[in-house]
Image 1 (tube, rainbow, N blue to C red):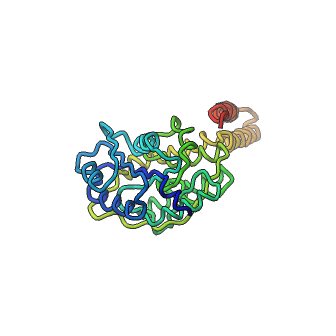
Image 2 (cartoon, helix red, strand yellow):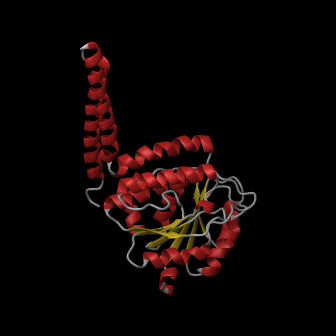
Image 3 (cartoon, one colour):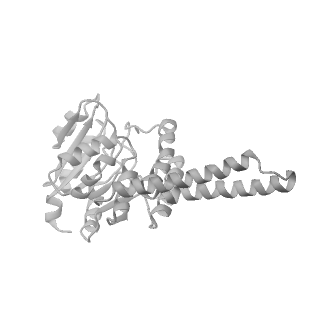
Length: 290
């Protein structure tokens, strides 16, 4: 990895009420990369996050109110001065020592390199299982192994990121959307294993198990419709069609007639398939210039 790369990169850190950990995080970054641009996006914190970040040597962008992790990342990428941007969390879980691993891989020709967490690095069994499901689903959708769909620790070529900035949500699901967008556009994505530390003592996660659990469940469908809608809609249509034909066969043998339920299943199968076709065309239009 060239020294020039580390000197001409921006590091974007979204932060909301991270006064406990933000200072040490920034000091660790500056110690290793004194020439890097460090941007902390203060997402409407009501503690001393911004003050501590500035004292530690970072430039701070202020959101007037909390807009979400994704909105903070987008603000940071818009403001970054360099083409190479590293995104990482403020809670002390991501190690600045792992940044060179991402940059080294990026320099080999990739457009985005993601720090992949091991199962030990997942925050709890429930999140580990959920992320495993997301990774498997995404891998099936794109035809490539996706090792960590939701990791927020990644190195990106800024010019590529900005192409999709209007597609990205403002909340915690931005990593899934940007990853699938890169795959859909044919850009190169790589994964490197990283070490994830425990959250700084006293620092709390801003993800709610129940509230965000429902939202993450919807991400599964969003991933499908964002990348290849027909690959999601066709199996559903096929199951409904098979169910309709099977039910028709059963009622014809037992009652000698075609029931309304059979008609409903077959009609729904056709409608779902047509929705998939339309969604596929809309998705193609979204990426027509990529």
